[in-house]
Every structure is written in structure tokens, then in C-alpha cells.
Image 1 (cartoon, rainbow, N blue to C red):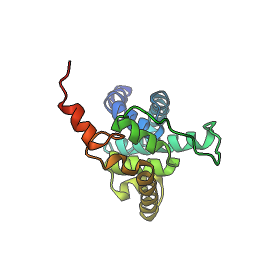
Image 2: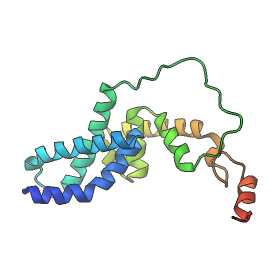
Image 3: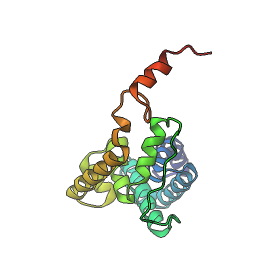
Length: 181
């Protein structure tokens, strides 16, 4: 990638996927935009070093994950850990599956979240994730196992129902079959 025009074409084509991946990593669209902009800036500066055209996408993905992990290490979320579990409302509306999964992803540590997003959303192999994160395949497997165990605990039965998360399957069928007006 030698010219600025080629880079601009690359950035336009790659930005939506990078943005979605960044959102899954951080859980916030504004932060995801910042991560993508930082990533594209780093890729632009490094483009003379990138020899193979097919390596640009992998370089961008790795740069995005590294930028996310660095950002996560440097910034504190402002959350305070306590020994008290917050009470849930008795009558909460049924959340959409997407919201439930994003909330569950938010409970994972930064590297575990990166592994899950790259392995199961970006559909990368263990070796590709290891290369992107700069760790061993064994580390990816153990991070993945721990993260998936935590997701199973956090999600509980919410994702095993045949209906919408948070509602019993019978209630979902009743609302699905009800006339819409």
C-alpha cells in the first residue's frame, strides 16, 4: 500500500468491520470510533513497513486489539468493586438477546473479551488470535475456556430458552401468536 489513495480505499472498505469489532471489544460506539481512528492512524503511519498487500487486514486487526488493550490498561472505568450484589427489579422488561450478550461480554476482562470476539465473532482460528494478541495458542485456548465459562455463568439460562431472553418460552409464544394492532 504505497499511495494515500490506496490507503483511503482500504480505510473506507475496512472501517465498518473494524468498528463492529471495536464495539464488541469495548461495548460503546463512541469509544469504538476512537479505537478505529487510532488504529487507522497507526496503520497509516506504518504502511511503508507493510510489505504484503494481504497482510494489511491482519495488521489492522492486531493494531485494533492492541490499541483496545492499551486503552483498557491506561483508563480506569470508574467502577468500584463491592461485596454487595445489586438488586434486580422484580418486573424488568424482557431485554433483547443482543443487549444481554453485550452486557455479558462487558463482564469479561479485556484480554478474555478480545479472545472471545476474535475467535467467535471475527471467526479467527486459535493460531490467528494468538498472532493477533501476541501470545501462544495455549494461552488463547485457556483464555477462551475461562471467558466462555464466565459467559455461561453470567448468561445462565437466559440463552437456553427457546423464547426471547428473560421470558419463558410459553410467554414468547403467546405474544408471537397475539394479533398485532
